[in-house]
Length: 113
Length: 116
Image 1 (cartoon, chains in turn purple, red):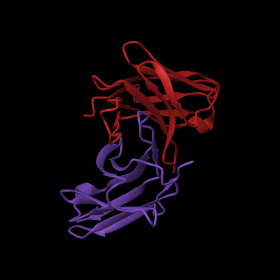
Image 2 (cartoon, rainbow over the protein chains, first blue to last red):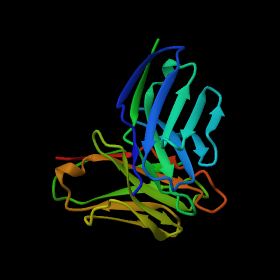
Image 3 (cartoon, each protein chain N blue to C red):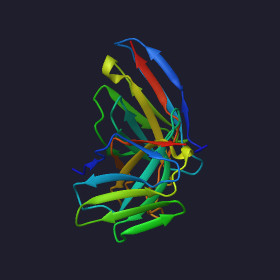
């Protein structure tokens, strides 16, 4: 059974610096990994994804890196902004016509002005 | 606004009771998913429906059940409630056909259930 682990429950960075959020997985059978962001009192919102055939995907200030040999996924936010303060979840997509996502427990990012 | 509507937003009830949470997916989405977020836990997948049929099942308790209706809205029924059922329950929807490859889900704002 696929497990997605986010071992850091929280992270604090200064505005303008880089935020690096990490995620480890156990099963290599997947199509996509996704990152979601969640503000308090709101539902999670999709942020960025990466296909298993790639090792990097970039969207503005957000870049996701996939290290398949290490079974490791990371999200880089550069430069970090106070509005980025939220809980970030990584998730894996079981693929096919079943879009069940398996989520990690999340990392609370706090960006200090 | 994700386009996914969940009601009620907040619900307080007593142990042993039964509640129903409702979800309207985004227009055009055929798949509906239910997730549970308890304190200090990630989003736990409960169940998925696609066009009225159950498609995938996760760690859903036998006391819980769900269905998706012909108009594609879904309901999650929680019965014989226990204190540990207190959580945020999220509904999400997706296009749900083969053309969508990234698996992106659109989440509602959640229903916060408190069992006293």
